[in-house]
Amino acid sequence: MSTDAITILKDDHKRIKALFQQFEQAGQNATKRKGSLVDRMIEELTVHTYIENECMYPQVRKLVPDLEDDVLESYEEHHVADVLCMELAAMSPDSERFDAKVSVLIENVTHHIDEEEDDWFPKVRKALGRKQLSEIGAEMLELKKKAPRSPAQPSALKKAGDAIIS
Ligand SMILES: [Fe+2]
Ligand SMILES: [Fe+2]
Image (cartoon, rainbow, N blue to C red; front, side, top):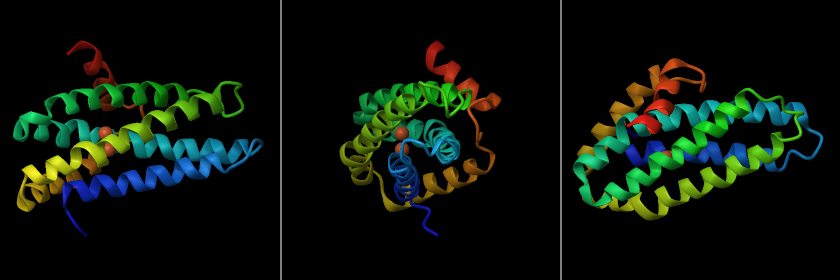
């Protein structure tokens, strides 16, 4: 398995986008299926934003100072997704607002993923060597093991808090 940081993150993106697509194709009345798809989205997103927030973003900020603004904007986009995930985790799939909230999550996260993949990950790849990217990737794979899997877990809540305070 590759430990290239960008490859790891793009694989996550692929799985997340597949869940988005399944949700969009699930149809009006597939309430139960949509509920379980959203559970999986929340889990994938919680782990993914955790390893980016804790490892990828601080490393990029340190090693590629030119991308500072992109990283800061990305933290804010993660925060918006965190809030939506937290609300969805507490919401029943047959609530009137459920589908609309999921649509907003999908729009926001898709935009964010596109910016990462098209705008600034290529610049990171250019600036960092293969060895550095593989070290960052190995660290992220380690972090995945202890990453929170639901937004209600303390390490996920701390992250949401930090976004407001710091
Ligand atoms: Fe991200
Ligand atoms: Fe990402």
